[in-house]
Length: 58
Image 1 (cartoon, rainbow, N blue to C red):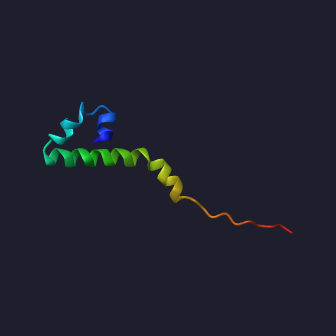
Image 2: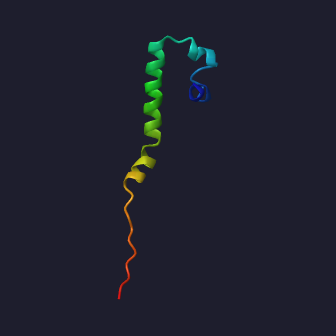
Image 3: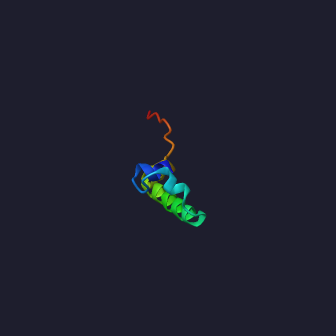
């Protein structure tokens, strides 16, 4: 709910609480999808981490 208010999608918290349960579920799924897309690049970099082993060339 705070995220919706911060991004100006709702005017006041009571707008969220007065929604019916179906609207809340749909809105929540869209917010989750938006956050996944926003942090996709960061998560991709974390998944692609490669271990680096020290090597001595003689």
